[in-house]
Amino acid sequence: MTRYVQPVPAPDDPYGSDTLLRSWLERQLGAAGHAAAKDRLADLAADVTGPLRAAHADAEAHPPTLVRYDPWGARVDRIDTSPGWQAQRAAAARHAVVALPHLGSARGTWGAAARVVQHALLHLYGPESATFSCPVAMADGAAALLSLPEVDPAVRDAWLPRLLSTDPETAITSGQWMTESQGGSDLGRSSTIGRPAADGSWRLTGEKWFCSAADSAMAVALARPEGAGRGSRVLAPFLVPRYAADSPLAGPAAPLAPAPGVSVHRLKEKLGTRALPTAEIGLRDAYALPLGDPTRPGLVRAMTLVVVTRVHNAAAAAGGMRRGLAYARAYASARHVAGGTLATSPLHRATLGALALDAAGAFVLAGHAFALLGRVEVGADPAAAAELRIVAPLAKLATGRLAVSSAGEYVESFGGAGYVEDTGVPRLLRDAQVLPIWEGTTNVLALDVLRAVSREDAGPPLLRRLDAAADLARPLSPVLADTLAAVTAELRERLAAVAADPQAAAAVAGARDLALRLAHALTTALLVEHAAWGDEQAEVAARLWARRRLRHEEIAADAHHHLELLG
Image (tube, rainbow, N blue to C red; front, side):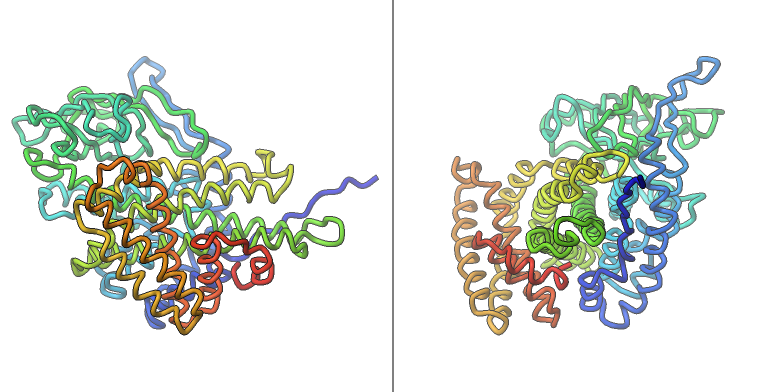
């Protein structure tokens, strides 16, 4: 008897098959701008479907290990990673996934929209990078921080070119050492202390509990300058070299020996992101360079990095949702059930259609955040800065939650095979769960939205976009326009109440619901804007998104009917 083996076709080319991605680029970049990006995107897509998919599998199968001592007893704290992880590192540099929006050539070609092109690169690269997208995000955030005018030019010149190198032999990434076991998101309880040294450098002492990309050549660490007082605002960001080769305190040492005063206590055993080395790290008079004046409150400088990593988080969520959808659709086309393939079942098509709608919503939300970030960096657009202050946390929190719910559906869509590790499918769910946690949980970000509204008047830019979208929607669908107008009026009242008394129990208790409502309304507006430009997929998505997320209606029949257009 011949044993049955289920065929599982590979999904289509992730750039060529993604109609929403390509139309978004056409609108954001213009025809000439998109044409200038096509070869770069096609080259990365070819790598993703070939060697990087294999590298991803290798990195997942061979997670990092910590070697504390060499054969003769010297403390080395070496983190060994797989060839697949190193291949992902090289590809990120080669394809300029970090560097592109910072390069003068890219800004000359696309201006502020260089960040839009970067988002497209991340959308293709991230889902099968074995979460190398994490060090990519932190390297980008560190580059943005180093680019601030208040950073010592000597420090910038020594480190920024290495972060932005497109040569795999010289490119580095950055870690992020902020979390401490007693504080977590409560940065005010941070106990790492910084003390100035005679040569202008500093020495850091403390314990960092969750340090991602611990194999990176540098990290940005938060520390409390000695004598600075309590609270979080006085914390300052410092650049800490990870290896002896970059530390003046080391003397002769092997290039990958740890920098003096930097100890790796252990690697974390995590639910997901298993290929990513995450560690507990101790600092004992570790050499550090201040990023800006450490005698002045520095948390606001560190937020430059955090905003970048938050929008990267949104890109990772949206990209993972899209790739999960591609795998689920490929499987449905081959998997036979009673009466035909899964792809012909109205029930399964409705499920996939709803997932395609969520993926579209997450994509435009992340894409908008990147577009705003580019306008802030190139041109210092004050309107974009005001809107980004609320859009960054909204995009991060909403896409993170969508990614987890979608990943659960993708695993379920494979049946029993989706629960078996060697298919690779369970990883979709394990890795998605970090997205609502890293860089702030849903509740932490919801409170950040309250602060943006009450302290920085971030509500009006968002409301203006919603008002304009309601007008744009009128020729497309009066019902859609009325829905968006009514929800905008509701949100205007809720934001006014928050601004009047942000500490009220009702405002704080309702912060999560308000943030999600704002994010869902903004997503509707962004889909309407793209639809008004002339995209049929966005028009259908806008109607269905508003019905599902704003009016809480059932959309199964329409999701089934429009699956091909949505997905």
